[in-house]
Length: 188
Image (cartoon, rainbow, N blue to C red; front, side, top):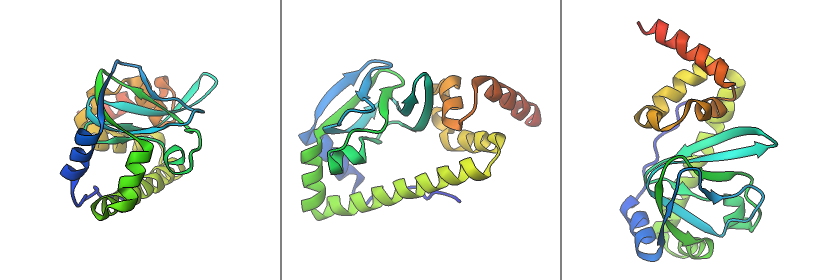
């Protein structure tokens, strides 16, 4: 299943919303934007840098997704239902983010039609991406997931560590090294 790229009605309007009403913050590499188990009271738009969304249990980590320039940071359960975040959001590199309070973001999305349209498209895109991710885990072997990962994240691959790539793919770092070796040999 191919996830369509989102076509937002007014991406500059969303960017302008964050730049006009938001506060710009800087995060260092490994700095936390949101912590698993705590409520998140803000939404961010990545101006520069990258982030990983991480589920953690003990010492084990699973990466839900990566977000880079132009992407939104947040936790829907926190924003919409005042629940705790089920994952942490950590900076992969030094990053800059425009931050709006969750209440301000939610109010804009509920009251202004251009933002409602954006929200519908954004949520539809998230749903389709999540469906594809689940199907990939259930139906694809790790090597096929890796090949797909390379295609999707090719422009930013060098910004994602091998350990994080493995955590995203649901395999060990050693298994990823073996897969990379096979893929490299196949491409010779």
